[in-house]
Image (cartoon, rainbow, N blue to C red; front, top):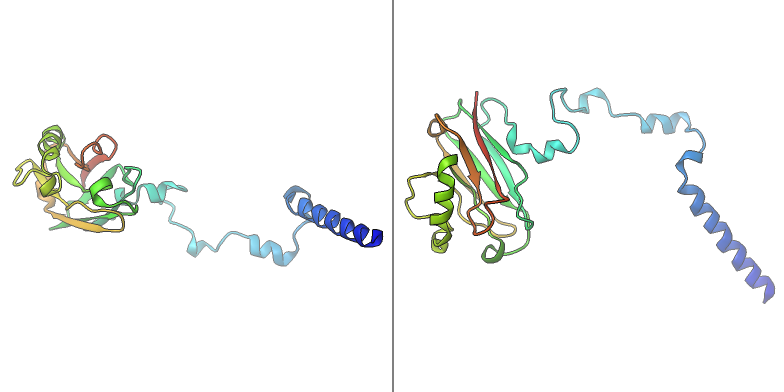
Amino acid sequence: MKAYLALISAAVIGLSACSQEASKPAEAPAPTASAASEAAPAPAESAPPADAPASGAASANSAAAPAAGNCATTVEANDAMQFNTKEIQVSKACKEFTVTLKHTGTQPKESMGHNIVIGKAEDMDGIFKDGAGAAATDYVKADDARVVAHTKLVGGGEEASLTLDPAKLAGGEYKFACTFPGHGALMNGKVTLVD
């Protein structure tokens, strides 16, 4: 019995020592030629272009950098009351521009609904106030002339789109926001007309 316990103890100590050595990468032996080639950076053709945003900024600004002539973008919203971008760039070259809103959360629209409403910056307070009592029309006052474009209200896993004429954005500063009550303070950004 003592020999059996001694054997189990030796096995546990050996496994423990192995797992501790594996967690110390600084003491690892020098890589072999094949390991070095596996660890080498990807070939240049798969690297991002030199003018691409650095690291995590690419996903956070995905809606902010369309190429000239790109006439659509996608904005994501989540259950933490956040859009994945603070700027939507609309190309002047487009006859129509489409913004798709994707709700990446799981909560229903009754408790965590999101929309995108675009209007002049100076009109947004009025759009929020008048929309607060308009639950039946997705928190956007019906026929509000201050609203350039808007999506319907969506819940988790849903999406909606809006289409606008870029010419309507000429002259002035424009914003986008979620008008679900209480969301606009966090969920807003600029709409910029670009070449």
